[in-house]
Length: 209
Image 1 (tube, helix red, strand yellow):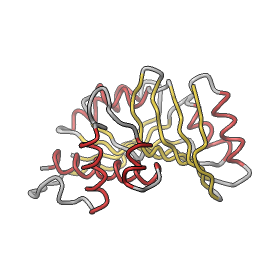
Image 2: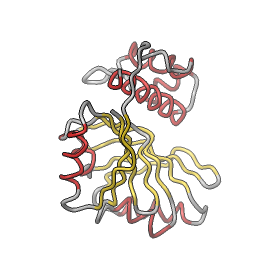
Image 3: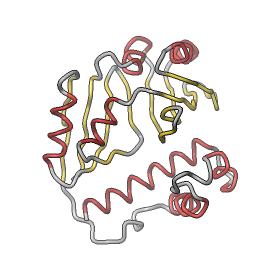
Image 4: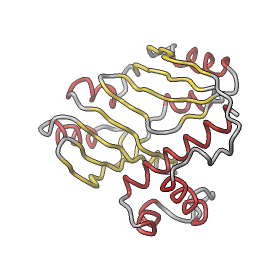
């Protein structure tokens, strides 16, 4: 089962930032570390607002670090270390699987989640609704008979295979995105997007099948 949840995360600094400055955040990837959640973000919006948004992020107590990796007109790529994970923790506790990209715009966070049963989605909504405004925008069941890898593009398959062989999925990890990206001859944002899409396709095929 696949569902799309929209969360107006009350008091969340990223949601507030998108509302105040008219920017949007796309969380391309993320993983937990002892320091906090390391994320690769695309910050997009008016050129004049992007530096202000980065400074606001750096000033917030939940953000340990913000590095600007790439600047393009209307879009900056950031690597962040974030200690706030209220929504993602609630989704995981309910037994849901969610994968990037997570979209944050206009004060609303949008998550695509996968569940074995509808009651897992309802459980997450109940917990999050205690402090936030939550809406289930879609729920659908699918059956996929083919291999979970069948839906991957060649580039997604290459990225997933390299990540597996180099130890990205080991605990502790034996590599990082910078080394993986260099090995594949792509940028870190491109690698993160390929891995995110590949992982989403594989999880969808497994859970829906």
